[in-house]
Image 1 (cartoon, protein in one colour):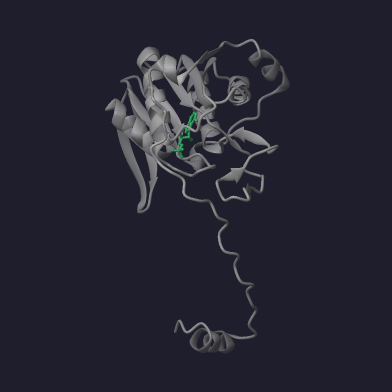
Image 2 (cartoon, protein in one colour; image 1 turned 120 degrees about the vertical axis):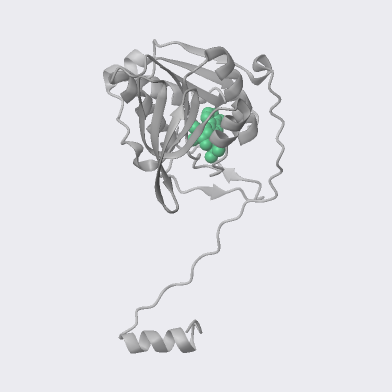
Amino acid sequence: MKVLVAVKRVVDYNVKIRIKADKSGVDTANLKMSMNPFDEIAVEEAIRWKEQGKANEVIVLSIGPQSAQDTLRTALAMGADRAILVKTDDEVQPLAVAKLIKAVAKTEAPDVILLGKQAIDDDSNQTGQMLAALLGWPQGTFVSSATPDENHRITVIREIDGGLETLSLVCPCVLTTDLRLNEPRYASLPNIMKAKKKPLDVTTPADLGVDTTPRLTLLKVEEPPTRKAGMIVGSVSELVEKLKNEAKVL
Ligand code: AMP
């Protein structure tokens, strides 16, 4: 089984982000960048399948500027076999990302494409679903368990509002990872060194014949309103009194 994993370079989840003064977006200058946490989970899952003999090749793919190579090297150090960078300095929105992944899938012909359920920078939660639709492949989103079998099927458990849903998907298929799928490993120093020698191909949206012109216009980005301080009440009757007379919710 050949597995393609899409990994995005995003602002590290520990960083407190700042909005640009003109409200045109998030200020990413000099910020620590890392692999999107859901994509780390996707890479980890693919590597585990390889270790269990269920996958024979793990390819990682990123769309972004030259610096996205760092993210790909991290995935290679975790255990992926080779990497592809679709290099662009332009903004690439989820539909264009899905089209680029589809174009790569045409030549690579993977059995499974793994993505994160969402990228934590713009929280779109769209790319996997769009990709499955463009390819006409089955999809399992928000997956918290995924078990490939010899019959070219993958049994997945999905986290949905009402509980858990189990699906049996025929490959080729698209999966998006949820938090509980696994705990990603840290790359060891020897593996980081080895990853420097693993193959990393660079291509461009033009090479793949994909127009990445944004379809959506960002109007403005604002901080959420700051919350008012809470208060500690002395008794249940005081709480009820305040809910009735101050908050007026009872
Ligand atoms: P989104 O729909 O933007 O929330 O992203 C969902 C998933 O799509 C991410 O977790 C990644 O697996 C993949 N993805 C989104 N943008 C990119 C990108 N620029 N390069 C590689 N993968 C991406």
